Length: 337
Ligand code: NAD
Ligand code: WQD
Image 1 (cartoon, rainbow, N blue to C red):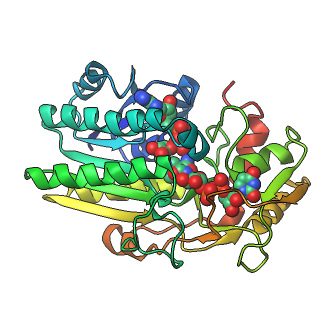
Image 2 (tube, rainbow, N blue to C red):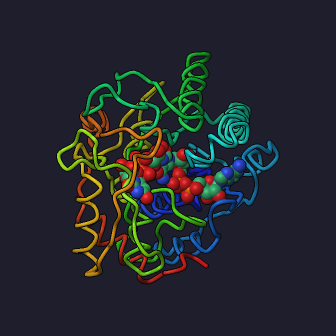
C-alpha cells in the first residue's frame, strides 16, 4: 500500500485511475483546480470503491497548494493535471506553456523539497506529431506539430534532466494514444465542456441526440477506407497501465521509463461510427468534410515495450469502448451537471 498524490485526479483519466488505484489498496490525495472537472467525479469514485479521498482544491502552479497536497505524506505522484486541447493551445500558447510547463516545474520543486522522487507523468502520443511509420515505437522521432504537444515533449525532457541531476528519482512518462470509453458502471466517464474536440465524445453526443451529425474530417487519407486511423485505448486499460507503472517504479531503484500506452490496433473513423451504432442501437449520421489541419492519417502504438517492462497490455477492444462509453452517456446525458 502506498500513499499517492494524483494531480488532476478529478479529470477523465485521473478519476478512472483513482478507482483502479484505490481498489489495489492505495490511499489517495487529489490536487485539482476543477477547471475542467467536477468534484462530483471524486464523490462517485468514493461511492464505487467505498474509500475516501483527501481532496486539495488548488492550482498546480501555486507552490502552497502543492506543498499542502504533499504534506499528506505522499510516496509517489501521478501527474495528470494540465490543459489538453490542441486547437486551444494554438490560440493560447502561453497559457499552455504556463499550466503544463510551469505547473510541472512547481510540482517537481515541491516534490524534491518534500523528498518525494517518484512520478508518473501523463504524456501523449501527440509528441510523435505526424509519424513517419506506424506502429510507432518509443524510439520514433519526437516531432510534435502543435503547442500542446511541444509542452508535453518539454515536460518529458525536464523530467529526464531532473532525474539525471541527482540519484533517487523514479520517473515514468506514459505516452497515451487515444483514451476513450468509461467505467463499466456508467458512473464516471468523460465530461467535456462545450463542443467536444475529440471523436468519441462527439459521436456519443450524436447518438444520444444532442448533436445532429458528425463531421468526418477527411475521406481521402491513405488508409483502407480513406478516414483517419487511431489507436483507441479503453480508459480502464489505461488506468491499469498507471497501476502497473507505479508498482514497477515503487519496486525499483533509480528508474526512467518512457512508454507508449496503446493497444497496437488501429480503427478508422467510419469503423468507430459503425461500432458505436451497434453498441447504442442508435444511428450516427455523418457528413464527409475536409481534413482537419494538423491531423495525421494514422497513429497506432507499438505497445511491446510496456508489455515487456510493465507486464501490461490492453484487454478491452473497440466494442467495450463503445459499450461503456454509451452506458455513461445514456445515464449522464449532461455529464456531471
Ligand atoms: P481532463 O481535463 O479531464 O483532466 C485534467 C484535470 O486537471 C482536470 O480535473 C482539471 O480540472 C485539472 N487541472 C487543469 N489545470 C489545472 C491546474 N492548473 N491546477 C490543478 N488542476 C488542474 O484531462 P484528461 O483527459 O483526464 O487528461 C489527463 C492528462 O492526460 C492531461 O495531462 C492530458 O494532457 C493527458 N492526455 C490526455 C489525453 C486524452 O485524449 N484525454 C491523451 C494523451 C494525454
Ligand atoms: C480522432 C480521429 C480525426 C473529431 C487528440 C489530440 C491528442 C490526444 C488525443 C491529448 C481523427 C477524426 C475527430 C470529429 C473526426 N490528446 N475526427 N470528426 O486528433 O487523434 O488526438 O486527442 O493528448 O493530442 O490531438 O483525436 O479524437 O480528435 O480524432 O472525423 O469531430 O477522428 O480527424 O482522424 P486525435 P480525435
